[in-house]
Image: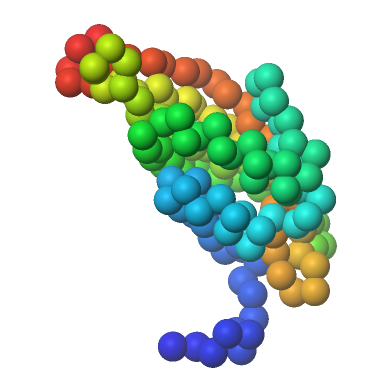
Length: 145
């Protein structure tokens, strides 16, 4: 294993690494770990909600506890670095599971995250990650439509 801090950061890998950490933190319900991947001045906006700081974002994640579990799948990523700032986009399908009338349901969202990553003192973290929800589908599980 490589001792921490001995390997130079590969900036081109950071968007993928951060997106993967993001979905793990959310799906595992380890919301406080978002501090590891977001700057304190992080912001996020989406349909009907917004967070003007990392702490507000973390507090907002509590709404996910209404679901029995979530499952996020990362798809395409596009973007580019300009110095220490990355502007890009990550595609994601976010599945939210819940029980209604004794039947398990799944609400899926097709999301295009509009994101900004900033490197500060050699560390890359999200500065912004806005949600553009392209589609949603809510249905019972078990093959019914």
